[in-house]
Length: 462
Image 1 (cartoon, rainbow, N blue to C red):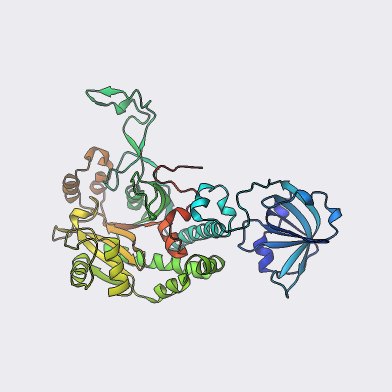
Image 2: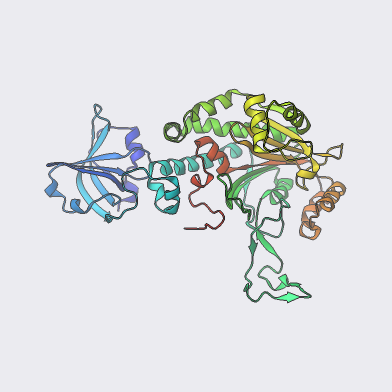
């Protein structure tokens, strides 16, 4: 099939020069027939725009009548510049091969389809303009994430997807077992996990952070970037059951330094999208959400406002606005509160730090007031929290008190405590939901539409 000889359509369209012969392989997006000519538009997934194929002397191509919308084809021919036309270059074929035919009931006819419908055919939706753009964008921003950390000397580590530890303490984990659920072995009135595959109760991970701490206390600066899972029955436009997280962890790092890196990282991604994903960003700006580019450009010109949780609550209490959720010290800030701080009070991105101990996780460093912890949430306009981070509790005696306070099973994190016994050091990190930041940068309204195959309650298709 001449895999290594083929030309990508994106490259052809970026450099529209005449050539003696090229090989193009892709799928038919449109077909238009006239008396003496046939026009095909081919797309190979590398570009938003299609390559137009102009076919003369129709009798030369025996397979032409079978090449319909959605068919896969291989075309060999000459590139001809046409600068006066919408298509700046077109391909005049010498050879035309039908690789995979497509019947008339092809679900992606040339019309607009709702995102809800396209989720039902997620195996085909990447062929549409929107989801082609989303998936190319996802790939490029994933590369940007690795580029950011690798250029700063971080090591990429692979945290396990199966774990015996509930890192967040919320209990919303998927149980991993080989038990026959109709015949679960019992011992002394309880499930006998000793007979299970791992010899103990195991779950899909909700975070790679705790394992990242292991590596940070050996390698220095590390980051994880992989799938995490949460069995939370939240059927909203912002929640998934399987989602990707970026979680850097830095040894000998405090909260202030953690906050600085989080801000630099977020702005790096925004700048990278504008500089290196112009085609996708222009598409999102035109077809998904107007002013998306202007929003990112505005954020890049802004400086982060930095306030404590206590200061945030005071601002919200004075606000001349009625919130759906009442504000008081000790309660979690809701999206409406976070957005008010960004959009109406400061009109800028905000970092809120030093949250009440009771509403954060057991591993966050207890402040001297013993009421708050060294935690930070990074807030941006339109959505609120986009990054959450903290300095970790490196003092063994305090960590043990936190474990007891939050009711964490100490036997499941004995190794985590040992990190504090053998050469402990201050360390900090944060987490960024990859799918959430893609949703924000693209303007897509539903997180299920920035993931190739979304998993959410009562849906695990494909």
